[in-house]
Amino acid sequence: MKHDKNSIPAKELIDNLDLILDAIYDDLLISDSEGKVIAVNSTFEEEYGLNRDDVVGKTVYQLEEEGYFKPSIVSRVLEEKKKLSLQQKNHKDRDKLVTATPVFDDGGSISFVISYSRDITEIEELQEKIRKYRSELDRLRGGDPEDFIITVSEESKAVAASMKTIAEYDANVIITGPSGVGKTMYARQIHKLSPRSEGPFIEMNCAAIPETLMESELFGYEKGAFTGASEKGKAGLIELADKGTLFLDEISEMSLSLQAKLLSVIQDKTVARVGGVKAKKVDFRLITATNKDIDKAVADGELREDLYYRLNVLHLDVLPLKKRKDDIIPLCEHFLEEFNEKYQRNKTFDPKALQSLVNYSWPGNVRELSNVVERAAMMTEGDTIEEISFETAGVKNYLEEVEEFESLDLNQFMEKIESDCFTKAWEKYRSSTKVAKALSISQPTAYRKLKKYVKGYSE
Image (cartoon, rainbow, N blue to C red; front, side):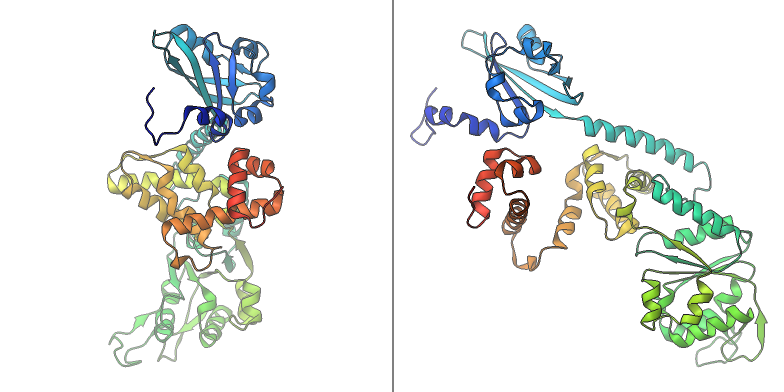
């Protein structure tokens, strides 16, 4: 082998072989032409609970007999004299995807076999979950295809059960929960499951309509009630909801004066249009929603206390997505199917991509999840959505905790992430070995990073 003057001397490579092997994430084993182990890395030691001194010198046949892995891929490579990959079980009953490559000498004989493996148990478990969730989605789609609610997690099943009970009673309902959890969808489902399902479902977002227009929208107006009013007048949303359901989203955004008028309508079951004197009887069920702490809104004077007691006869609290993570994968599958149909695509998720979505905190809840899946369906190349498609979601999650990131370029930003990661790990574990284990890296790598990022590091 030729070396130029800038190449690394072979002796230096040999002297640092253990450090080089330990920098490899996969567990690695090197054997000679007889199947005798001549080297393993630290990941192999951790994975199999063996010290390298106990492994080096043994044969792969002995390790197989002792139950550390089965079958031995090295023995097959020595027989077939070619690179092979197969699925293997280790002594912890974990599934491993293992690959072994022969290294030949000048005469065409095998000198070494290098094998490396990666644990795929979690991926297989995730794929099984995906199959289960797809089956559950097919079952759910057997009902009304519009606005069906994913209820796979135990938490969402409990909310759905409460929703069905609430729907049976003709009483006012308030739905609480953070933005993006689907409060409007729950309101529609309550209406569909209620005795009023044949009547209209009328909705208004109180935060989306200017206060000057909200009164006329809600109560309607008589002919000539104000400049620009229709000559025929107009029925308000309360009138239109007669014999059905009126849904007012973000109720705490309604002005206190309008809250007083709404309270009067609820109490008297009559409504008078703006500019009118004659009250009309109305029969509707009222459902309201808010993303605020309802008790705090009352305490802060944003919601009238007397109105609150009228609204809060029945209460449904919809949990954020991070508290019902078992719903994330079926929601992803549901949204992807919708967007595949919408954009004439045939996308599928790589299991690692789904796992990255499960690990994300989703501050925007179901609405944010839907947007991310739609963007991935449109922007990713090929038919498989890979983990990289959701890089922005992961970065956004981190940016919630990092200040002044706007002044950093990409390299500085990534270094800041790494520095923060190792600093926090050192504060918690105070050992490079424990840091390496926690971050799934080798101890030498942990040592180098800690020395680089942690001020005054020593152990």
